Length: 439
Image (cartoon, rainbow, N blue to C red; front, side, top):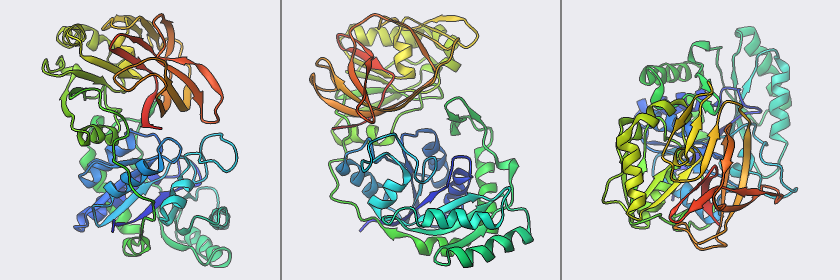
């Protein structure tokens, strides 16, 4: 049996669920609890904070992009602990625009699938009794999920607390009020264009996590929270291999510029028998010459374009890998680096690997966001032509030129056709899509 779990969700983004999740993970760890973390949706930044708080890599749970067997395998992987704390995405019910009745990638879908109870984090600024009405509405929103408890954030004082508590007893007595957190602006995490500034860039993450733990310990009933958790009720788990490995020994770029890799994908390659060899392009390291594949995940190469362009060891090593016939695959930021050049936000162009006939720019930013179904248009190390995958696109880059053969035929979450995506040239390929699972 896997460990019991629960989901920390919210009515909307910005309510404080990440702070609460980190505080709970850190506080339970201080108690000696073996706690595991999970994250709903196509996120790579929050799981890195989770890993820092609980000392182990978290898992991604995505109701739209993952096959049920892959999702069940991820839940089972997270369950090798005393407790699983899962952070939701956006608002509890929010997800992709899909036909009614289909999975939309929402936190509610994961709650319904796992049976984990929901702890709703409500930002109580600007309301008192109305905060209880928000909880009551979400508690009745879907019969297949259980809002078991609520936690009120940015509470102004004792009078504010009493007003919320009194209305909770009237409107939703079945929902446990777990705690009332004061405003903690000093614990606000900084953000940039793709979300929070990465955990690896935080100037003093250990101090931040200790402060978050103290906040939670002082204002949240941790014993009651742990008592709410329930074992997951997923179906049978799959093989835990979301994507076929690119080779037998895969060089994986890993540093502040290339941090957007799903732990489940990397672990799946290991399960399939591949050996992973990390290297740092920012440290001017090239891929190990003994590797038959190279993976450049997404990240923030646009913030380091000048440095990457000047790292001759990295670029020559990447070109040498391609020349000897290694498979080279890039996603989003990694795809841009495989191209000929990247124009940064200040309008300066930087020469990059030149392995694909692609030019990208951040001089005129344009948001691209949403789930994607991607079908291979030719045989590649990822599979044969016609193989289908699910993933997510989130970037602000503009494509100035994309002259090669496209890699994927593309549709959005609702099945609406989109222009072909990516580029391929022999065993070198990439796109802006972050692949999550195969179909």
